[in-house]
Length: 427
Image (cartoon, rainbow, N blue to C red; front, top):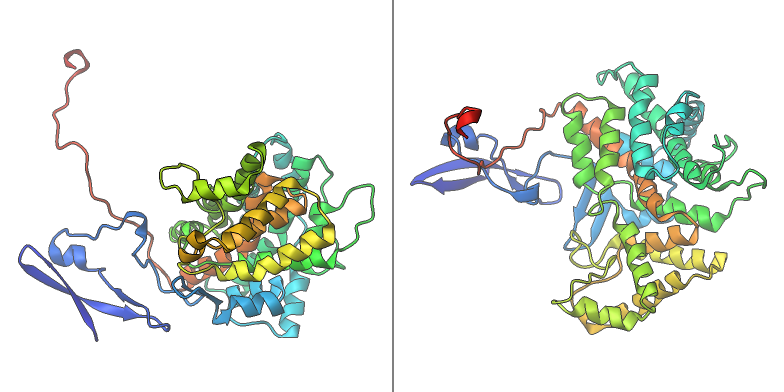
């Protein structure tokens, strides 16, 4: 077995090297603190720390590769339904037709949300951020499904997963309809999974809802593209909360809260807010491209480049076509979307952006699509959470089944040394 060594204070410690199926390597320093008498590694934000072994998602940022269970994101977005990808991520294989039909039928049977959940929803003002609403409602599901999941039972695990996959889209649609002041919708069992999500969100009470296949196709792709992304902030949160043996609903609720942050799931919202700012300043895209290139200017071009993908975001290539189709089909007249298209066209032929591989990413195009569909900006992250749900469930399930220990990072203490306590009269 390969070994790696760490030398400190004239002593050398050896550690095994672990490898993955895609020729990734890591140094297993689990025994470092014990062997060295207190030495730990220091890695701010865990950027170079592997917290687990996982067989769910492979991401190679240098070569712009993203695969779920070995399948390329391009193939899945082009050929699969979101429900198929949900099954794949959670259970490890693409479903047969019988398996998919049963999965969908079971989801329909569990899609009813207890009427008392409405009382919780009613407690929020219309001004409440939808992510706070969804996080709270997801956590509240525990009260209506109090039995803990027996992870040793495939049946118990399956039933818990089906309940969450069934009810989470309802909660997301309720958050949107609450914000828009519309009556709640329970969906239609005659529709497929994504069609039903679209209807629950957008049906107006005084109109018959007609399915737009271009909109459904775009949303299907967006949900697939967001379904998992390896050990990011929210996924790591789900795993570490679950490592305490917290239940599935509580762990997913924590993931929703982690995704809420503007540095994580709020990126597509930041894109639209940036475009709104450019519009208010006259809509001069060339001016803002120059500002983005000026290292002394605080302006940042949101939706271009990616902290993980060093070449291009493979998800962006897939969803760009859908963005164009949606805009063309809906015929939306919107100055903000015109500014977005102008920025895209100019940046793709600007040497500064091309040389630095600062291409539009998935957040840029998803923001454009959601804007065109009339989804409020603060609902964008809820749509992200809806897509990420199967990945969170898959990661939680894997973490529990592999019996990972409770997460417990270390720290380097930088506070005061020991101090004597002084009574209040002597301070």
